[in-house]
Length: 156
Image 1: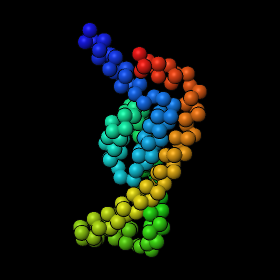
Image 2: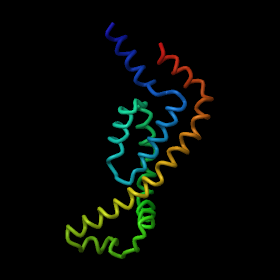
Image 3: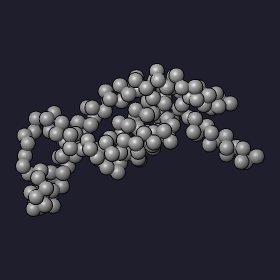
Image 4: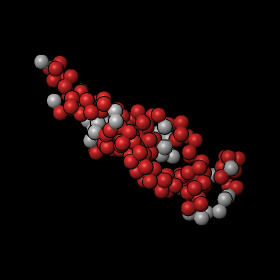
């Protein structure tokens, strides 16, 4: 009897937030948060967001992990876009050699400024991209019969 209860809870957990719209939102948030320009923070953010918003945890983490290579590729474009948004002048101080020869305070100050620029750019880009992904995926996911079947399993 405990096995069946555990099995039902597991099935409900896997099917949680599987309506086409919520699944599209879950995938969009996983992709967008997965591209956050701070390495190592995305898994915790996705898990927290899924639990708070009652989204499908395995799906958001799968989307997060799927875009991790893009996260690394987008760090420098986010830094450049953030610098452009803040109208900061390009500085040669960001070169690796000058950073290695700076004091620890200068190093962390410069790296913090670069991280701030990247976060600003990510935030500006993330909201419209999440909305676009959600609106693009919702009609596609409505056509998948397995999603409709999983909704009936969750209702049982």
